[in-house]
Length: 283
Ligand SMILES: O=C(O)c1cc(=O)[nH]c(=O)n1[C@@H]1O[C@H](COP(=O)(O)O)[C@@H](O)[C@H]1O
Image (cartoon, rainbow, N blue to C red; front, side):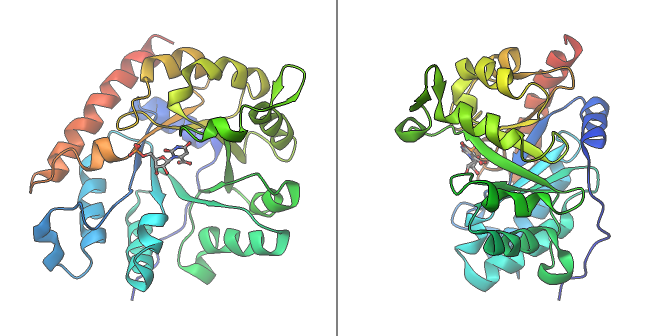
């Protein structure tokens, strides 16, 4: 039985304050694969939760956000959902929480997905935000925007190779599909309840994205294991409020496969935070 924590949401102003206070815009991804965690943890009741708890404790001063990729939990059935709920419960109040579930369906189904990640009374979890795929259009995204103080983080331009299959297709003269997505989705909500995912591997495209979404926060995965460049992302993607949450998952949480995994994760997070501090100071 999991005891629910007091639910406190984080709005845009509070997120910006956290970035200024911690001098960090790092989001740590808890993509916790049970086959990759140190073997000694497998003797505990909930190894994935135990791993996450130690990672969170060791890294919380260096980041402003945690992103839990739900696939790593859903793939383990009931035990995985329990690890997910317990981990959500451990997330510090001063961090912005992201359920990276990439949901989106017809309206009444999207509403159920929103309840699954936002409404603790029904699901046991209340994340600040959930990642949403926009392919099914307005009625699939808007249900996520009906929840007060909650955010939809909509896929804009993704970091993977396959992003070239559709996202760069021209839909009008000098307009690519990802641009149309960002222009249109921006009109469905505000920069207080919509962010966009933009892959760090797309450094050159941040200028284009900022033309369409100058004030929105961007969630930027792809630094670390996928090789995206932090300096380039900041150069082209930052706005006056910082406007970026940079995610790193594997490079932080698997910095060591030994019993020192939490200290190694802290050292990696500190290294990225130090770089971010210098960038913020030079803004
Ligand atoms: O929405 C995402 O978070 C996401 C979008 C994207 O374009 N690329 C991408 O890598 N992600 C996620 O970001 C994380 C990246 O993990 P690392 O490559 O290990 O840092 C994973 O959870 C991915 O699912």
